[in-house]
Image (cartoon, rainbow, N blue to C red; front, side, top):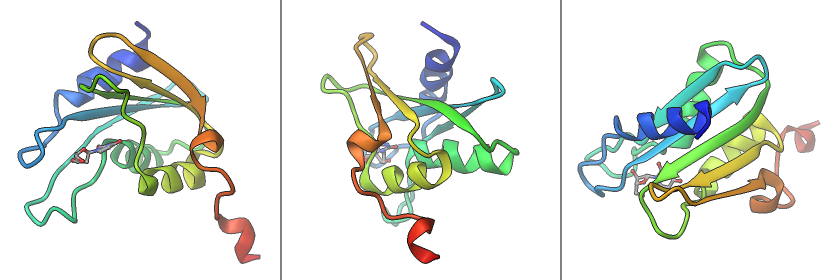
Length: 128
Ligand code: THU
């Protein structure tokens, strides 16, 4: 297991998921090698819940990360858990066509580019 995968699994253990019980960890790698991890954080309002991927991405930006290479998403599901639609949009805008690695606790992995999950994305290009 590489450092990024280990960081995603470790972050998953810090998930605050009292409502769904579904714990997710994400770890985003900067071009310079730094790793920014996040976990899902649920709200009793449900709607204010934040996914692990967006926690990792926003944290990365807040800590000065700018160019990202890979993100690992770790969850305890037999079928590997892909990022939700909102996270795909945010990842596209902050990370571009980043490599996405899905993994579970049994060690299954699958890797793809974000453009596979979010074809024909909307982004700042359209606002020119
Ligand atoms: N969740 C994530 O953190 N990432 C995903 O890719 C899918 C869903 C969280 C949100 C919520 O806390 C819980 O998983 C159930 O949807």
